[in-house]
Amino acid sequence: MRKVPVSKWIPIALMVGIIAAIYVIIAREFNLILWAAFISWPLYFLAGTTIKKMDEAVIGLTGGLIAGWGLVKLIPLFSGTFGAFWTLPVLVTIAAFIIVFLEIVPEFDMAPAYFLSFASFFAAMGILNSATGEVLGPGFDTVIKLWIPFMVGLGFAYLTGKLVKQFLST
Image (cartoon, rainbow, N blue to C red; front, top):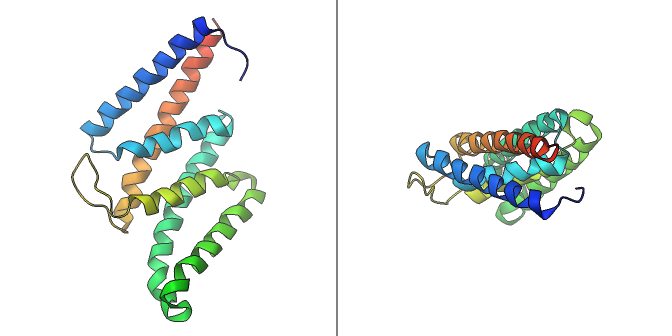
């Protein structure tokens, strides 16, 4: 990022803080998993703040969640083959290989998004959703409950990026 004078940086930081607070209020009001948007929000900036990269982030975040859910569904099918100890490491190896291999396909070359959402799926299982008091499980509902705040986070990132660009151009 180019050098920004402190006189412009303070209002930008304040603006981002206010937008983050607005998200917290929205997340509480609509029972969204609070932390999930803060996973996807910086991804937009790490990827380069373009619509093309936003599309790739959506694909990657969605793909990672579905991969995590699918992996959990495959565990019982492969535990007889690999045993209780080795099934998860083998399946994670296959998933990681596929995610990294997708980097050669331009529309899918957002490995960080896949890995962040893949890990988020596993992190969310068994935790208490502070907004609703429910414990999340390995079902597809956890995919949806993470996907929605991921997309909200990307939306807030896009808004933040546009506002910062506009503010810096003045």
